Picture 1: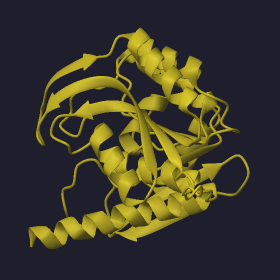
Picture 2: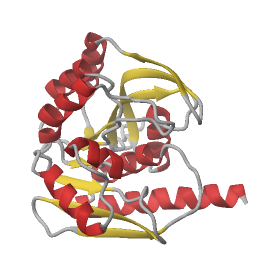
Picture 3: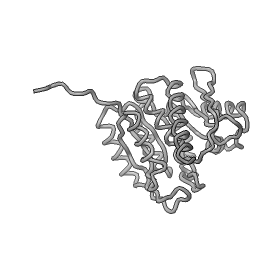
Length: 258
């Protein structure tokens, strides 16, 4: 009898909403983790009915259901990182913030999902306020795009790398250990993301801009970063590898479209 068992693969807990089109949210997250050979646990925060162009309906899960999912997920053990996506409302933000372990025991990556690609709101104003007050101080990394960063700060959208760094540093002061401000919605030949942390000078992650429409890139990036953190990469390395992963997917999508 063989008593040798294969070691358990790293595990990431995904806290997010579902997307019936499969383009973003929980389904995109789990796809990324599978490709990176990391196992997924999940706590579903909301159910959305949407296509690639519109959101027709959203339903937030009852807070006690979210709470119990989180309790059971953490009881299962072996969680190497946590990725947080759509939360929907203040009650869910509060439940998640209350349930999270310390970021020293499991890195926590927050993708602040505020609006869908088609423009539908995915987090209430009260939820945004609670996210800033309760959740940001618990996170290892926050990954806003330009519009999400502006919303977090109540400011205009950054129009230069210098402004991006300044906004990322302001978000950092809300309590997270790192902020990766994504420049995919900017203009120019390069898409530059900037990483600011409490422990190192700002870093830039440039990449040639790819002319392709692909939903779920924010979900994919934050999930890939969480996967690499669970695989024991440093924060800077995880951000670099995550960006390279998403860039490869964009090139694949462009090649398929040609």
